Length: 316
Image (cartoon, rainbow, N blue to C red):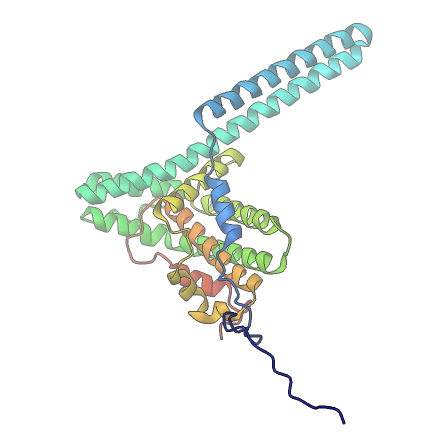
């Protein structure tokens, strides 16, 4: 008969127990796409870098101009008709470039005008200067081709608040709609685009378009370079104040506290990136608005984000 003996297996007590039923922990969303987009908007060249870029651009323009002139001159000697046509086309190109540069300068000047009006309004409110407040209100009314609604106001605060109520509340609603649309686009792009850096490009494009539209709503109408400078000012303002970071207040305001931990990583990133886009948009409103917020109508990030993402993500 065989000897049936129990087999004893010694376990090493130094080995920690393995919990095979533990679920993998999902990292908390950090809004990587918007963090990268804001950092890209805030990045500016150094002094030597700007001088090098300017000198290089001038040198390339000079070389191209001389080459075009030599080409047209030689072509006139060989085929006069084609040579004169090349000269005319070169002149048209030069005129178009000058007109484009003038348009860019005019757009940048309009954006600076909005900033100057807001600064004058803040000084008038701080000093109680009624005459300056009325001058600012008249300038804002002229900006929108509207009648000055504050002729009967008797103090600086009433003048500024009256101008705000009659001239800017409707524009604020339009700007808020632009912010909501951009936040929705960024959230959807983040949730649906799995490619690395593709969501960053989508967020950057949507934010630049949003900032441009907000400036246009308030009368800025910046060009390409003016819009980039404005976006850089918005990004620098956000990074200086620290509101671009993802904190518990942001997560709680857009996802009801612990809901993000129950969502997938991509959906959570979409919600956070949408909320950060709302922050960028509200900062752009403050920088593009010709008057400061005085009547408690400044929208909040949570309200704008909740309205923008309503129906896209289940808030439970």
